[in-house]
Amino acid sequence: MKIMIRRSPEGLSIYVPKKDLEEPIVESEYETLWGGWIKVANGWVLDLPEMARDTRLPITINAKKRDETGHDP
Image (tube, rainbow, N blue to C red; front, side):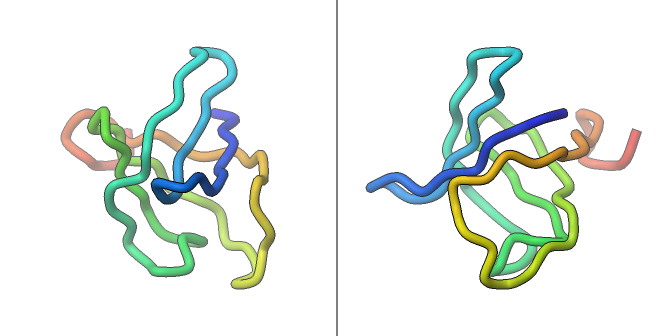
């Protein structure tokens, strides 16, 4: 799914254009985000692609949503 990751005064958040949904990122596997998973406030767990550590935000990427148990579908 296409998502935008951006920085706000409250921290990092994602925006999903097809669902007109914005949610804060509440947890991440890696401090740099890239190549690991993130968890957003609504409970979704998304796998992010590998990218350079210094990738600038905001950025639109393809993320893979895990199933409700947190595992790859």
